[in-house]
Length: 174
Image (cartoon, rainbow, N blue to C red):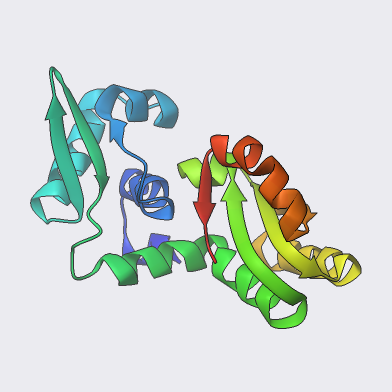
């Protein structure tokens, strides 16, 4: 979907990285290493997105850090497109609609950092039908072409282990 809107593969990687988790802030060399690109090629895209207002740039010493500009008028739409591209929106909608009492849903680890590794770690908190959750995960995997690794916890169990889970990179969806 994004390849039809954006011809630059670098721009697509940046949007996925920074708009999947708007709390993530990255600097140029870190992104260049992660994307296996030269810093100069990446700098052009970062500067272009920053000048358009889609990214915020913050100078810290010699390093410039970039993150999604959540105050930009198009932020909700871009974020929605990015999530639809990887299928997270469908997965969460299906989980919430048919599982019972879902109190919270978290994306953990790589996807929370904006890395599309092909494996989505999903934490579901509440009283849910685990058989139905596993079934939905299999359906979602075939639709989004990614592996979904599930953790489901009752609220009490989550509260007892909250620090363990929330020390990991995470992104709360619900």
